[in-house]
Image 1 (tube, rainbow, N blue to C red):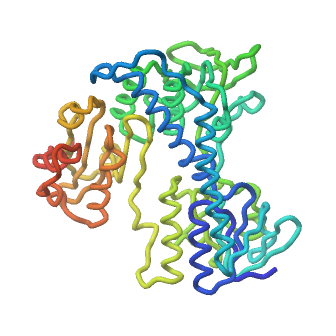
Image 2: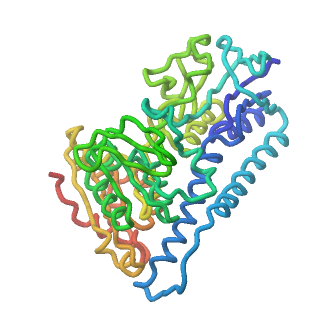
Length: 455
């Protein structure tokens, strides 16, 4: 039962690392307690973006009159068929991983929950497996706050099993998960109420973006109730009743379903980390250094469980960092990484690096280039003028500090900024570039012609 390396979890970082280790001659065991592929494949990016695509089609079908497209008759949403399509995409990904593990020599897939028995040993189904190197890639799970645990509730995982559209979906939490599902199910036909304890949506963004998203959602008929400290829920007949301490709006709301989108926590509470003397922070995230090593030097932590990113792309970059120190000449480090992500609402919000709040808190002298989507020709031509673009530049160096985009296609053209930041290029490189007309991204050089001092 001895291997050169053990990987716990088949999420984004795990399979790539297993393949690399095996191709470099190591005998590898990869453990999985559930379905292959982790969060992204099974309950995250893959299924939700499939649903977002269906919701987008429904929205277009119902909202194209202004562009001269008139549809006679009603648009029917078949959630069961949407789910079947999603399930097929997921199964294809799982099957691809199964084939990969079986086709690469030196990889052994072990099904079951892994727990440390000491720093070199992991128990699975009563059997002990040992290795000189161990890689923890266990991901995260929904956080369920007190006051809801005795009530029938949905999470971002279980809501994907529904085959009937909720009559009234109450969503607790105004982060990107809550917003994506809220807009999605509103477009499917549900009445949707979003409750959030903050003063604006998306608390990690500058307030103007959260407020702009709220206006976009309200136009679609989504009810948003801010400053709501949701403390409990209970079954009331055939409905769910949520009780909240609210400065505005009703303190009691009834709906057919409740979705808890109140954040995620790492899957580290049942790993036996104490027996391996692996250190975690107060939230349960495994502490790592710049190479993703834990305090036990032959054990690494990758993906959501290390608290250094909650995204598929950061998990894959974790693999790249670890792999570079194992087998590559050029070494990668966690500190090389720029924060970047998107909320896949419609229009999407995309972010890289620092925002205005970060810059002011850091005391950096900076400039800002901005443009409302309503001033961009391509957006007007598409009839999608909601949102705004902002790019932040350090005054002393002319380096780009970050950008936040809210607008049609923002999740794609944000990469123009990301690439320039990794190149450590001054903003003038984009300013002086020629972009294709008519596109939204052609306005990035124009925006940067005259950045203004940040107040």
